[in-house]
Length: 354
DNA sequence: TTCCCGCTGG
DNA sequence: CCAGCTGGAA
Image (cartoon, rainbow, N blue to C red):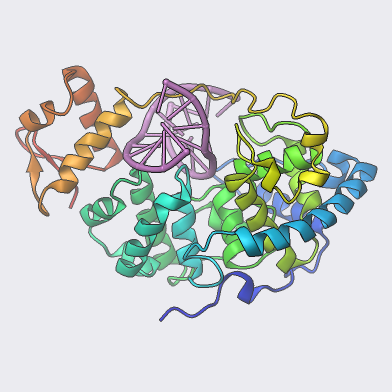
């Protein structure tokens, strides 16, 4: 059975023994020092400089108050998700974070449990049949994530002896791992003191401490600095903080209709004090419809393929029944092939890759 | 219908 | 920087 060696059970001090500012700066320096395919925002200034020294002290003080409220709220209101409370491995945390990218936790839970019992570690996933991996991804959405996760497993198994690395840069270099996922693994699996930044956290922190909506688009330097300034100095508190703020953003401090009556931070919330200016303000990303899009057509093709017995193929004629627009259908078949999600057989039939 | 909101590649 | 990628719940 899996032993509890992640999450708060392995909380330990920052290895560098540096202050918050230095930790943050170190991460940036290291990221800048090595050549990388994934770009990362360069932190020119310390978080304190970015928000201003005086402002930083004020924020730290209200963050300490917020931490007390959040800790209580976490105990009574947090969801009992199966990867929490040290019940899985670092690899299990990585898998759940990748599954959670753009996908609600509630939908992830059953897939994660089935996935982890089938492939409990990176090595077993690396050895799995591609078609099985795509099949197990089921209807989670964005199936390219399944292939990237398997590529990630191959790297971890081959280059890291089946042990997920603990360095930010090494994590960032893995397929399907970006800033959010790397930080989430460091905080939730390894108990490091790292500011985890996703849109839930950006929204909650921006509202509670700055009193403004976090507008869409990439994370601003101010938002990043804010996240580091309010992050509790003690490691184990920082892990709780990341989890609780994220949970708060998901359950209470939602985008359009925040449940302020249930919010532990309401008494001190700057956004509430300001009268919630521009609540639910425009996301920079324009809405992308789903119905009738290539994504929907790709989804139905894969759904049909998953329903087939192992090794089964879908004829082009059968695929035509899934999409009235022949041009769109062929475009989607080609893109699925490009992505490595299907194989084209002689005669234009298709199947899940071997 | 509206909302969800990270990684990748260009 | 920005467009593209799913599918289900509210």
